[in-house]
Length: 301
Image (cartoon, rainbow, N blue to C red; front, side, top):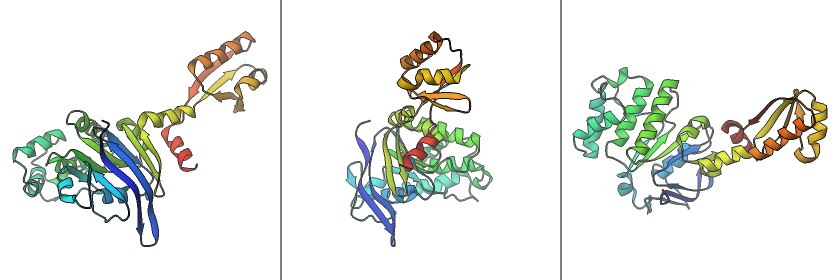
């Protein structure tokens, strides 16, 4: 997983006089699920369009599979499947007929239609018109289209956007399956941080065109742990605050004492100290930032 499939160096982009992307540099390792996170308007879709050669870049280097997209676009796109913004489907045609249209364009063997329908769990619905599909089924059919030519890299722009909880769960399971069972490297853009945390191995956070974080999911979760605190409820908060003030820098609010979480051993020492001084501890627990709160902290730095 160490070899980069995607490399972007110093990518900036303007729409007229408006700076949309500001010096973006990132790498996506082969075999990873890369979550590209940011609020609407942050620059996610523009980055993906540039990555696929749908917009012309200026003064930047974008490489896929080690080749520059500007001079090797056709060869590169034969190895990439993508779903950007809304699925483009013929609603009057069945799922199979939609795939047949694209199969002829890709010049894939006919058996590939059944293979991709099975991958996205639409084999039984293949003969139904796409117009009768739920939003989640349309999304999966669009992913099936992107998989027809068996790409190595799959680029999905907001794949769970607008889906109900069942659709989100099904899409998440599909992405995991394509990555683990079929070896696809997957780039997902999303504003749903909690969803990406359940899928991604690597994460980039973009805000107002600037990349604020780029690394592994575990590194992001470590940031979350670094913001964790211990909350304590005791019978005598005033005495506890005096006891802890020198070594633990406690805060007091809403009837609870909180201190920075350092380690499990340090938490045990704190608990033992309170008991030794005759303070009854009713509750003691660790509170970690969720990714939503962490995201707010990162973009406001």
